[in-house]
Image 1 (tube, rainbow, N blue to C red):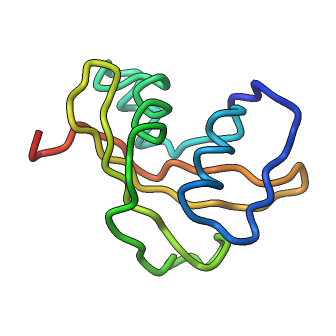
Image 2 (cartoon, rainbow, N blue to C red; image 1 turned 180 degrees about the vertical axis):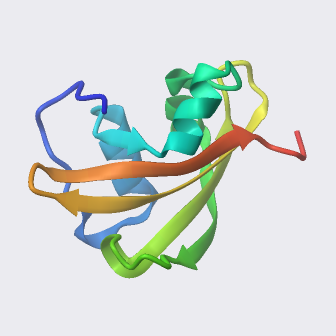
Length: 112
């Protein structure tokens, strides 16, 4: 997990503002699936950050695991560092060290 800053966002309301705040200060982590995409060169952590910075929430689904703030998983469509459409899905989770944004999946958009 990246920890670029010590400040914490208040995640109680969720949404794109909270997600952007958490990602901007490095409060995020990812699944093994996303890690594999990074290791395989299909994306970079910077692509994930750029997608969140440029993206919009296109869908909110119920979190099947039920461990996220507001019980939501957010689908965000933005741009990667090369300017291509990029898709992420993730959720805000609270832990003993505060909140993080957890990337569940990430890839170039099939549309772009």
